[in-house]
Image (cartoon, rainbow, N blue to C red):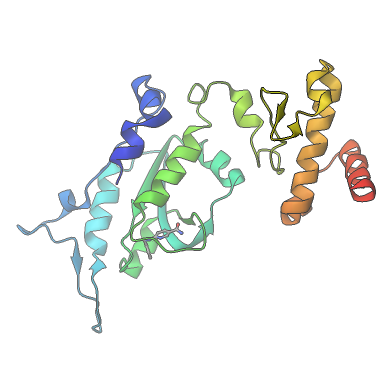
Length: 229
Ligand code: 4FD
């Protein structure tokens, strides 16, 4: 599950450059019996298996240190946002516990610092959600993404969706590159991009706009959008 994202992509290059280190720990290494039992049937009966609290406790104790933040990926956790990602990136060490869909002993919740969800859907395990967290956080480590400016220009970094981008040719399928982008007027280009980011967010994600701090210029641009379409 972790092989793909860790051996391809920017994450591999970042690790080769020692910008970050990603370790995968097998819960079975913390079992005590010869069968390496990491789960048991649920108390009270029923289908499926439940991951054992004692095994998980030993695993967390085995990997955590000073400055570790222990996260449990589950559908009932707090939803991950760019704001949350930025905050996680300040941590020295993240420990991410991946549960199985059949469940984890409820007492594990007391062993973690926080519960996170990547969205309102259920997957077979927490591994892919964990890699989503790793990827999103890694982008805030200097050097992982080409320029920090490309992180700061992203959708969500300031609460808005991205402005549209174009490259050559000047006309494609009857659609032209907006003239201002070919004008060489940097201030005008910056203002056009800000306006288009506001427009896209206004029409597609008004919920985001409601939570975004807007400048007086932003408000003026928005009123132009509302008035003129
Ligand atoms: N939306 C997410 C996280 C984990 C997961 C699991 C209870 C299921 C989705 C605990 C139920 C873990 C998410 C594993 N699916 N599946 O972030």
